[in-house]
Length: 334
Image (tube, rainbow, N blue to C red; front, side):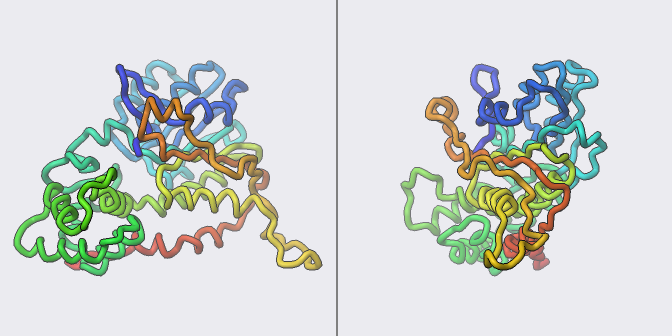
């Protein structure tokens, strides 16, 4: 699920050619890169001297890459260490904004940083924080009730063995502090199959990462804020890497690009007027060549839409995924 992969000291952002063809930076303007990472998309956009990029990332470790671009491109590149939900704080001349880009994968550097605990090779204290967090994975595993752990694993990981794994975690932590290696052992000992192509702990790690970073509400609020930030005619483009986030993005674009009416004899309600022009109903996926070069890109899906209206009622969008956002509000036992 990595958004980029490093080969021969070069970074390869997922679906770069496809994204660039959609946002059309050849014609100039300002672009908002909401997941700066190692700067793959931003660098490509800045190749044209008529373009400007405002980039954000919740991860403070990307400052090194951001400073390089700020120095190289002077007044054409600016970086802010904020989350998706905070993009409404960005000061920008909205009429100059051409596109807002979200790449929801995480970088190879984040995976290789074993202190983050995103990799199955990580050791020691559980972490999984991506930046600007209220708690770590360690606190979740140490203090969440069995019922709440089950909910996190079930709703965010779709893990078949959620109940058994949650029960085993609670039993184990009575006698020891659970670290990353311990968690992997717990999952391995609970699951019946041992030789799947996918690591036994994949869904549990995904669920915990989503919960620790509040990825669901961040995405929902980020998309809504992006709509109000970008002018009519601007593009919102999102690259997803797992089914939960893709389901959210798909609903956001599709639901607000279609006029829904219960009967042709009933006048169209004002709140049913389209907010987006959806040119591609199906997502754009990586080519076989890209997947061969960067195998983690195989799960990537690119969806985009053009804003055609200044106001939109997103109440249905928020309510649609309330069950998922409610999980983020689960409280610790201790």
